[in-house]
Length: 148
Image (cartoon, rainbow, N blue to C red; front, top):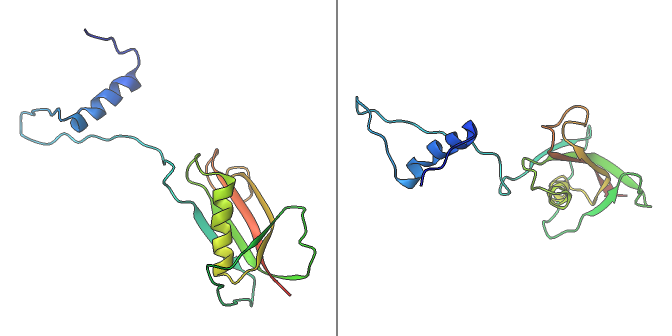
């Protein structure tokens, strides 16, 4: 049975998949035909983390077993703190959620010597200023603090 291919993109997908199925092509000069299979990042792509210390502040990192409190934008911790710097976490996959971005931000806070992240918020990476990434990807930002 022969099926009609109604879409050029479907035809390309079939051609790209042929070498993976063991179907090769003979060329007059014995050269190789290269294929390219387009792909987008999947769920296994780790987010990018950027940190920036406040001027004159560089405390020692905290142990990975330490806890980091999280306070969303508009929710104050209710105790005095010193701002150590900022952390930003950019997703590279639409499969990455806020919980995963928060986990990366907490690890970065530990590396910066922080006890908590405050003023935590997230938005589409293309909507934040300055633009942090492509539309449809999440971007989380927070201030890293230590208790006084």
